[in-house]
Amino acid sequence: MRLSREEVVHIASLCRITMTDEDIARFQDQLSNILQQFEALKKVNTEGVPPTAQSLSLHNVLRDDSPRPSLSREDVLRNAPQQQEDQLRIRAVLEE
Image (tube, rainbow, N blue to C red; front, side):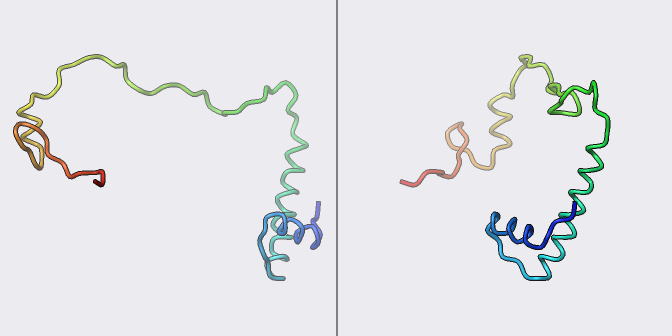
């Protein structure tokens, strides 16, 4: 299916974009080529193929959540850039 110049101009107006004459000619070729590819896909026999939203099955790849010991307070504070009275000290993130 070959798109006409007027169809490309109409599509551009629906998208609210301006095009030069060069753009119109280029998109006329490109969009027509895309439509030809879809015509080829229409010929593929899909009888008995169920509709799918994903081509691959989805599954959770996270590990099981199991309790384990945490770091000691001393280890955490040892890695902190700033500390005050056995607590982490951070910059204020809210304006006053």
